[in-house]
Image (cartoon, rainbow, N blue to C red; front, side, top):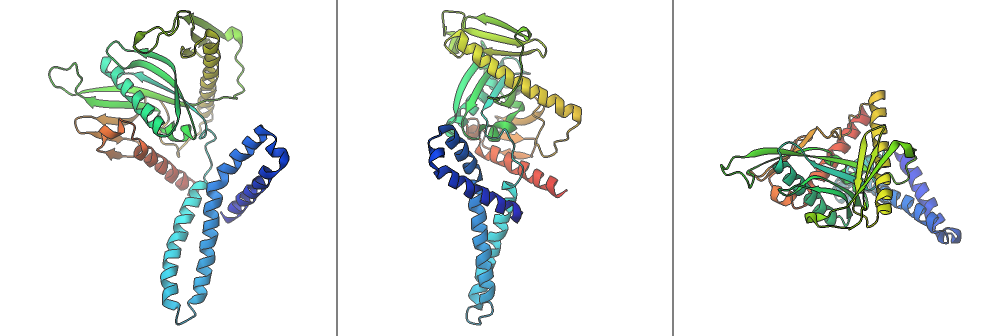
Length: 353
């Protein structure tokens, strides 16, 4: 571990020197790239330097044990330093785990009402607003790509692009089936109904090398409609793009012009094709991803929202929180941090095995 940390610190120092060179400061793209690399190492280097200082302090206190007058003070100090050492070692082990190459990417999120009819669509709307509020707390930006509103409220389907720092690293655990248990507003008998909505989260692939032949794409254009059914544009600006070989369909109506919607749709289509290709490769090679929480499969039941008991349960890690009213308002931090922590534990265990 120490050798790896020494190499990381050396790399960090090299980057720091590079960032002060005049030729770097004059090249905006290079400056951005090197700054990003340096920033990605900063937390590890800072912790490692603290760790080295703690080790130095331990060595000094061990020498003080030989002094009868300072022995008792040194013992107390050593106890605290040993605790710090263990804590720092645990944190450094986590920071040295292999990074998910997608963690810093933006996210394409798709939410659909599933089993439960109108109530499922209403719940899909509730989930979208939950992620919208959580994104606002994280200073992320949400762009709606396509929204198909339900006549009873909510959405039969809504797709959005979420942009910001580390979006995928936090939202990647949200893929799967979300189940709600509550009394619908339309239920006169007071019975609790169970409905589901599905969530898919995938990284936005901005510079992916995917060849999409023009003859493999079918493009339909139509008049776009906004929230509440109002007209966004009086021209046929909305675009539905179908990739014939895979059957993947992307709809985009958020941009002002047909050309902009086509460009956005093609970008998202490439991301979806790329994700599908990766999934197939993993299946064919039989890759077992024990460290990953869940499969990211739309059908996997990951979480239940029980309104009568104000309870949210994440079935993958056995987490139950009696604060549904706060979670549905976007206070997802405790849920997401618990998922990240459990994922890290499993990866550490896998490394030990």
